Image (cartoon, rainbow, N blue to C red; front, top):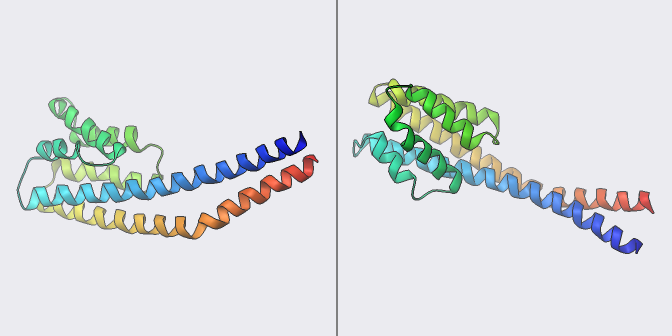
Length: 169
C-alpha cells in the first residue's frame, strides 16, 4: 500500500508542475492574441477608418476565448457610453477578463482605453502600435521562459515529490 501513496504523491507533484507550465503557456498565447487584436484595431482605424464598435464586433468572433469575451464586453457596453466614459468601460473589461494576468502589462493595456476613448486618430494609432509591439515582446519573453523552464520545473516538482515520499517512509 505504501507504493500507491508514493505514486500518488509523485503524480500530484508532476501534475502541479504541468498545471503551472500550462498557465505560463496560456499567458503567452493570450498576449499574442491581444497583440494581434490591437494590430487589427490599428489597421481598421488607419486603413479602413471603421468605427470601434464595428471593429469590436468583428473581434468577438475570431480570437481566443478571453480576448473574445473582452471585446464582447466592450461591444455590449457601447450603448452606455453616454452614461460612462469609454476609459472606464475599457478598464472594467480589462479587469473582468484579464484580472488573473500579470499586473504590469494589464496596467498598460488598461491605460490604452484613455487613448482610444478621447484622442485624435493619429494618437490612437500610435498607442495601438506601441502597445502591440510591447505585447509582442512580452509574448516572446513568456514563450522563451516557458521553453527554458519546462524541464527544470517538471524535474524540481518530481524531485520534491520524491523527497516527500522519502520523508514519509
